[in-house]
Image 1 (spheres, rainbow, N blue to C red):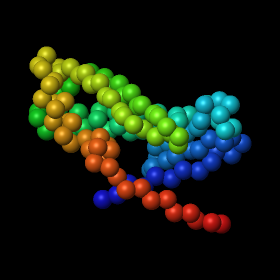
Image 2 (cartoon, rainbow, N blue to C red):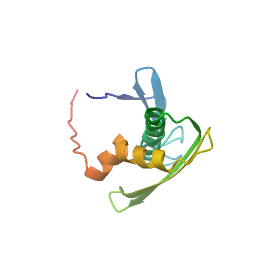
Image 3 (tube, rainbow, N blue to C red):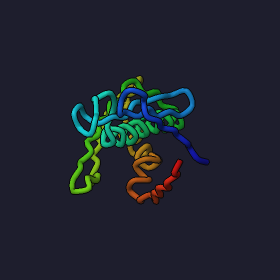
Length: 135
């Protein structure tokens, strides 16, 4: 199994648009930084969204498998960056959810933690290769 995303520059800006299927997102730098216009998320924010978004999905998958109906889901991700070049040195996620039956969500959160693809991938390390395709 694999997932493929595409990114291209947005004409008239220095931002990029990324897409997979019919879903799009804008990636940019803060206004005034390397031509950034603040039109979209930066890399650290995208990493946090990937981590938190994946966990939100896994909470729902896990709850469904357990026969539990979740009411609210709240996730906050803090990504810590350091060094030159800048790298992510830590990510901290806070998770809160409620069940429609008023029950405890601790087991749902624990099981989702075990199955979350993005957090498991980051914790185990993932090989990244970059290939230059010259025009």
